[in-house]
Length: 282
Image (cartoon, rainbow, N blue to C red):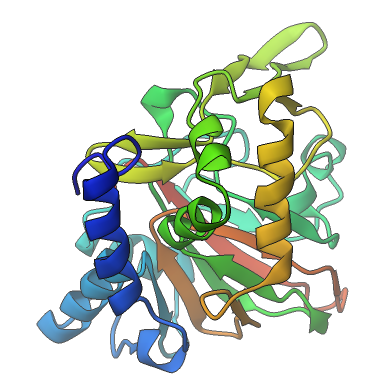
C-alpha cells in the first residue's frame, strides 16, 4: 500500500480497490476450524486472506479441553507471537475478560458489565508497543447482551475522507490525541501518550482512537473532525458489523475499531472472553 494519506492518486486507486473487495455480510467471513492446535492449510489461508482483505475473520471451533492453550497456539500459527504485557495479562499471555471484584482491575471498563464505546486496542500504548492485531474468543457468553460491533479501520478512513478530506487530514496530525499518564499511589504505571489518530504504519493504514472522552485530550483544531468521526461510527454503514459472539466463536483481526454493549451475567456462570494483543499484523 502506497502512502494513501498524502498522495491523492495513490489514495484513489487504493480506495477503489478496497471498496470493490470489501465485505458487507458476515457469513463469508466465518472460518470453521476443526482443531485450533493444528490449522489446516485451507483454514490458515482463509483467515489470512480475510484479514488481508477486510482486516478481520470470525472463527468458530469445538469445545476445547484447555481454551487458553488452544487460542495461544492458534494465534502463533498465524504469526502472532509478540504479545502485549499489559497490566492484567495472565501467565498464559491472554487477558481474561470477565467481571471482576478486584477494585484496581474494575477501574477498567472491559472488566465490568458496562458498555464500551468505539475504540482500538492499546490506543494508550507508545509507538514501540503499537497493537497491530488482537484475538477475542468466547469461552462463556453472558446471560444476555455483550454484543460486539466492529468496522474495518481502512473503511472508516474512506468514509471519513469521502465526507471531509479536511477532517481526514486533521486526524493525521501528530498531536491529535493525548492519553495522560496512568498513575497509582504516585507511581507511573503507563506514561503519557500523544500521537495521530490515523497514520501510516509499515506501509499500512493504522488507527489509534477511543470514543471515550474521560482522561482523553484532543487538540483544539481536531475536535470538529473527531465529532465527525464519531458521527460516522454512530450512523452505521453496509460495512459495519454487529454480532453476538457465542461460545466457541471468536474474532481475529488487525486491531479493527470495535465496541461492546452492556450485559447481564449469571453469577454462577459469568461471561468469559480470552483476549490476546499482539505487535504483529495477521
